[in-house]
Image 1: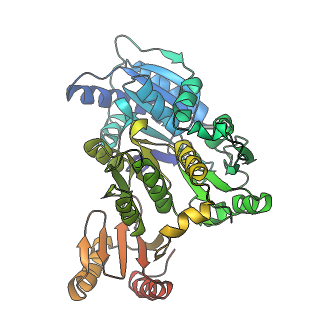
Image 2: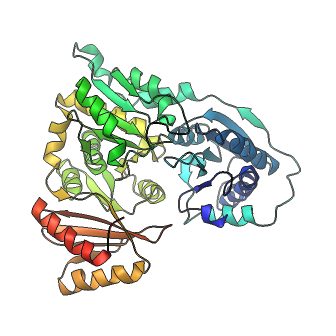
Image 3: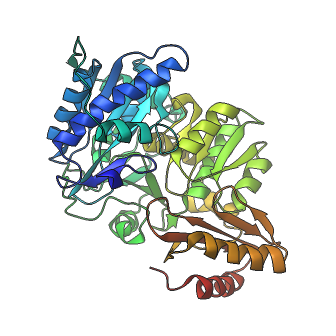
Length: 460
């Protein structure tokens, strides 16, 4: 069971790895984390927001989790079916001591999991918190609290809608411009419940796979994989939509396609949204993950901002946002972080920001991204490597040592040259190295990719 406690969440097969008994014990263990955090400063509220995704087994797991939380003396606000960003919002908005979402995100139907946060939607991660939950959940079970907590149902749909729509630029309502045509693929996941919000944004919506179904009958709910964008891209082109968006299983990530049905890298979307936000707050800091195109920090500087590179992972991005006061952040995985959203990620707020940008500019999506397509860039390429550290150090010796590239160890290794760069970082949970590289021309990219692949092995 210990293998299900990951770097950012708990995730495993149901019921073999994650079942009701373990969920109950995790609920009891979460109380220890709330108490320990309270010991570090002001006492945290003894209330936890609980919500779940559309998987059938999320219902009994959620009930068992609530039983563990209340047995440990914590009160529960059960907001029912919700996206992970809705859980973050509720945790912050309701002043709760923490939040837990029952979900396995984009994983297949036989998986389930738990995502955690503390007061103010501060993330709980493998660097801080999850090991504490693991130790107490798998250790000797403590005695129940003298006074058990209670479970109360709570609806937050109205408050969440007001929050999301407060980001919408409504100046378009005073014009006679035709509605933007938005194709959206919910992949039968929790993005389905965003439909009223999307329609409230004043678009003509083309919904695709907007039926909640935890078996994912149409395609995997992972918008990063090109094969999962095919149906959306086809719909955009067929119906001449202005843009398309695809959500993942728990609704915290979004991937965009332009009016030609072509996928837009999330790093480029990060730059576009940042440029728009910097018009209102010039000089603000914007966080981008270390794998982003060089065009991203260049664009942020051109729009009066300060780019801040960060490690991959929501806990790192959110911590840096809080420390620096950054106005916005984005990752290649399709997470978009907003300071005015408890520094948490929100796919629906990214959609609102893109709609605002399209309306204000009057340009097509492909025209907006064209100035950012300055370099040739690879996708993330995975290699199965047993000796991850040794392999990376060999690359450092060759490219930073012999060839004089500039080395950065923020996340794995990134080595920069004048006309190309690459990043290799280890997986947290698998014997994998992940490669991303970029070059000034497609020809140079192909040559360098072949060179690195020869040293890393056959991609998987």
